[in-house]
Image (cartoon, rainbow, N blue to C red; front, top):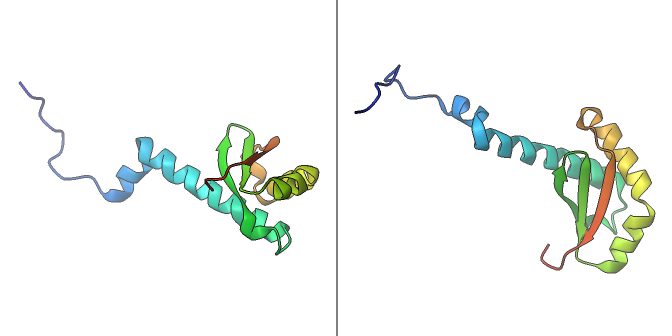
Length: 105
């Protein structure tokens, strides 16, 4: 036995995208885009192509790079970077920044 649908009309794509896993994923993508934009506005042109925000979990942003030398530079500037990210997105509750070297980026 099957339950009858309340409405036979299909849901609009906008409604589907706001619900569930797809909505969460789109929200995270937008947060990453905004953080990367703020990061690129802050960093010098020499460093920009070598790093990006790769994840945000709770109150921690993860900044990834392929190069350990760039990671070292970012590590010593992480307080300034975190401050720039916090000012660009005041509602994000970012409290920490982690630097990660990953050759697959």
